[in-house]
Image (cartoon, rainbow, N blue to C red; front, top):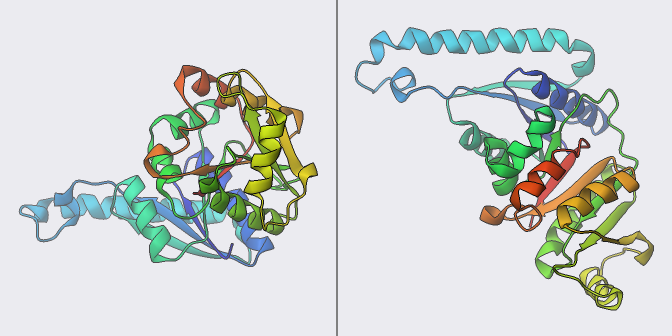
Length: 278
């Protein structure tokens, strides 16, 4: 985790993400790319566009305003950012496209994003720019919901359906657990709708971790009415500090999250969530 991308709109939620990113950067001797995106009409930013002459000052105003906010942020978090190389980055682009472009341009290892309280995860899972980032990002995305004075992971759960396509995400989660210095716990949420016997799940688990150094004692089967409720209840029961989920393209995390109940349940998970590309 040497190169950390932190998108910011200078809100409290973005500040929460920056504080966590700073702790990660200090621990792993990393650098932060603090990104602010200006989604402006083309005529404001393209000098080849007809009529740009009268509009250019407005674009410059937004650039200067962004720089002012960066300066204020650096001042406010001088203690947190002390000793960390921080790149001030402003791009004229839509939020999702800009984040994807910059993460690839600077070969970032992880994206750390803030989320707006109980509504934040609803947006992530239901249709915001953050959801798009979570769905399509080729690199892990860490979503921070609340201010964390100390980002310390004592319990890390990766929720999986134990299918072969999930192995890649699981292996990445394992690598992160080593970095976080925590033993990863693997969880399967067993529901009446897609009930599986313990014997079936033991066989699935054995196949899933084949050639991977992972102990059966780290595997948990949690029975609940829905997957969504199970994730919430298991996270509470195990006092999880971090919940990991695999995502893939258009399906995103829809395998796990569906319907209004999901929105209600997941919105109550205030712990950080990290997603890995399948």
